[in-house]
Image (tube, rainbow, N blue to C red; front, side, top):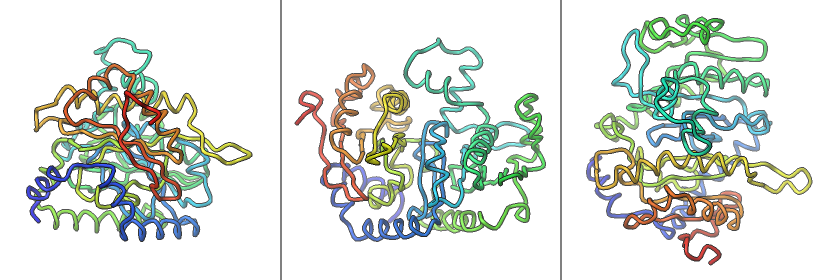
Amino acid sequence: MPANEVLRHLEDTPITPEFLKADNNSEEAKELSSAWKENHNRGSLWGIVTCGDARIITPCPDNIISVRSIATAGTKDKEIFGSEHVQFTVVMSHVDGDTIKKGEKPKGCGGLGAKEEALNGNHENRVEGIQYYIDKNIEHPDPVIQALITAREIRNSTRKPALAVIQNHRTGKIFPFAVFLHGYQTVASELDILNLEKEYDPSKIYANEIPTLPTDAIPDIFSGFLETNVLQVDELLRKYPNLTEIQRVQNPEMVVVSSKLPSVRVRYPKTTNYPGRIFKLFLSREKEKTTRKIDITPVAQNEIMNQIQYPLGYAVKNYGQPNQPFSRTKRVLIETSDIGVSKKLATELAEKEWMKEWLVLPDHRIIVAQNIEGVSNIIDYFDPANPKS
C-alpha cells in the first residue's frame, strides 16, 4: 500500500483502547513478547538510549530495552544498563539529513534546539515544564557531544560497552562515532575528546559532514546492531519510497508514557508499524528492595510531566494546521504495571494548565493501561472529571 494511502487508512482508524487491546492480544505481539523474554533470559539485550522523537527508528524490537526522553537526556540508571540481561548500550542522537553539511552542526532535534536557544538567553528561567527539564538535564546542544557524554557516563557506571551514534531520522541511517569499553575508548578522527567541550568548534567536528568511525575500529560486539540497522533502512525505503518526506515533519498520533523497558513496538506492533506514528517517553521507576515492586518516585513523576509539555504544547499551538509538528497528536497513553499508578499520573497530568488546553480540543483523550509481563489486561479512556472510575 503506498505511503499516502497508509496514512489515510491510519487517519480513518483512530487509536482507541479497543484497538490497543486487540493489538496487544495479536499473535504478532505474543511472538515478539516471547522472543524478547528469550533474549532477556539469555542476557543478549541491547540497551537503546535515544530521543522520544517519533521519527527515531530503532532496530529489532524483540532484542532491545528502550529508554527514550527529550533529546536523549533521560535516566542513565545503572540498574537498567548494568543489568546482566544487557550486553551493551547504544546512545543515539538524531538529526535531519537535509541539514547535514560540511563544517556545520546539523539540526533536527527539537530539545537540543531549545537548549541552544536557552544558552543564547532566549527564554526566562523556569521552575517546571519543558524548559526547566532542558536546562536541568541536557548537557550540550550539539548532538555529538550530548551522545558522547551520555555514552561515556553509562560506560563508567556500568563497566559495559557503550556506542555513541547519530541517526539521520529522515532515512534511519546510523553513523557510529565513539566507542567506550572498560578502560578503553576510541572516537572518530574529527573529535578531540579532551578539548571537545572546552573548545567547541563545529567546523572541526563536522569537517566531513558527520564524524564516523571506520568499520575496523568498531568492536564485533556491536556488529549485530549496526548490520540490523542497514537491513532496516533498506527495508523501510523499499516499503516507503517517500520515507524522507514522511519523516520531514514530526506529527505523531499518540504520545506514549511507559515504565516498561521493552520497546512499545513489542506490545503494540500494529499501532507502531507506520513510521512516525508514536512519540515515546520512558517513565523512570524504582524497585523496592524487599518486595521488588515497581514504584514511581515524585522526582520521576515531575520529570515526566515536564517532558510531556513539549509535544502537547506544540499540539495545542499547531492544532488545525496539518503540516505542522504534533498537529494530529490526539492521544496520550500512560502505561505502568499498576492501573492505580497510571490513573494517578493521568490525574496529575490533567491538572496542568497546558494539559487542560489540550484536553478541550475535539477527540483529544488520555488512555490509561496496566501492563504486566507484556500483557495489557486493562486499557481504558481516562475521565478527568471522574478520575477514580
